[in-house]
Amino acid sequence: MNDQSPIERPAPEAAAAPAPAPAPKSERRAARPRPKALILTERAAERVRALLAARGKPSAGIRIGIRTKGCSGLSYTLEYADEKGPLDEVVEEHGVTLLIDPKATMFILGTEMDYVEEKLQSGFVFKNPNEKGRCGCGESFHV
Image (cartoon, rainbow, N blue to C red; front, side):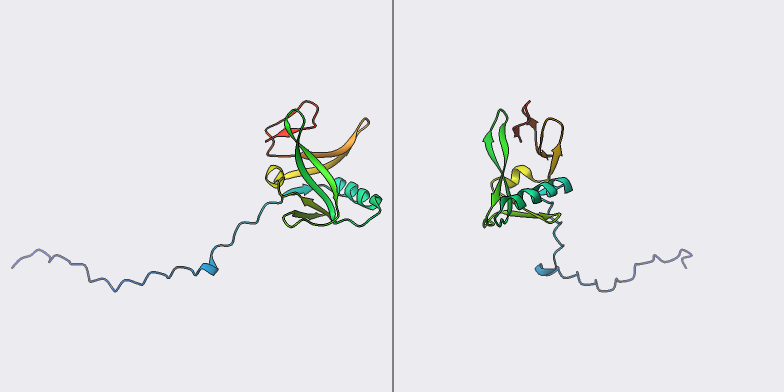
């Protein structure tokens, strides 16, 4: 007889487990939260509140937009908003409502709006991460 051990054959595998069913469309992974269109500092909110109070008539908030102006191409605009436009982006922060013109949204995503008072000037300052450059006087920017 043969002293060698018989060749071991693998045992037949158990029936393969069924593949998990794909997740129903309603159970998809949650979307990442959308970043804020505009970040408002407390100082800017205080100034907006003061402007709205001094206006003397009810307002939906302050509308922020952009227009073509200056040496670099674009400039921020601020105006009183009597009502919310159908496509306005609404930012409510520190008890203040800002409405962002839909044409301006893509240019100001992630921008911080602050209010600065210095010896020779005071006003709103925009820190925009999308800016590629600014003119020397600071009135306009480009993206």
